[in-house]
Length: 63
Image 1 (cartoon, rainbow, N blue to C red):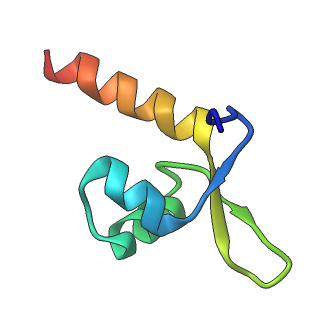
Image 2 (spheres, rainbow, N blue to C red; image 1 turned 30 degrees about the vertical axis):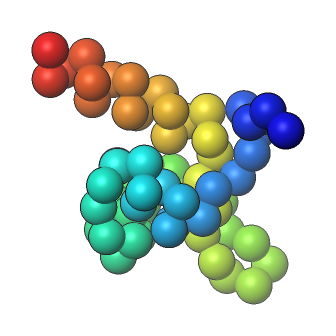
């Protein structure tokens, strides 16, 4: 199954992509560095398209 740009990622999945702790992802969301969607249960989810855009921008900055 191909990854859909509208997919929602958990903090743990985002953490793997950035190679950080899931708590760091939660801190970034609280600080407004990345936007999060709240589920009905209050859990954070992140849009795959936005996370991939941040990753691309970070990679370009490192070059």
